[in-house]
Image (cartoon, rainbow, N blue to C red; front, side):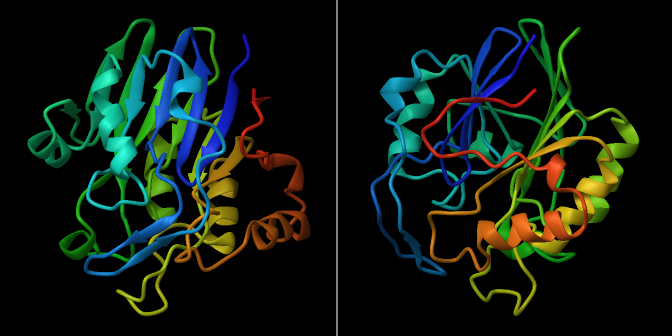
Length: 249
């Protein structure tokens, strides 16, 4: 039983898992500018079109309030999926979203999806960044998968690992996203904290996403790879080439 993954770009990853077609945080717009409280600049378009992914059984939406996690084209895609899971706040704003509170579970065919906490910045960031969620996927006979969402807290990863002691694949949103809202404190994991998270998750294979394609990512994938290599954990890192499907477990 193998899990295949295709990186579309940014936070958008297509997973084939336990017979389901699963997509994380859909972003399919071309490069462009997103004005707002902090203007975001998308530098790279999707490596594949949404139509190339076929039917979507499930979309995992970490949050809807930032266009680098749900852009215009991604928002239009939501109704085409059989099910969209997200935060309770997203469910209030978007009719197609089923909201899950932290630790709440939802069964999708043979897969159990558990919403897990995420903090989009330093402690107390929710007041400005809004609520964000991660997810854990479990199915009998299949590896357990953790999708972090825009989480910057290693302590949150520790809490999740205490409840799910055997996580086999960790999809970590890295890239040290930073728009200056909290000074030097990043909104997502950076190379150092991603490494710390991988150590908390012991033997999990780490698949970094949300680490390229946007101007506000303040670190490169090369730095992340170097951090893992220098710590002797390069074998735990699985860097995907956008647009190329690969087996990750």
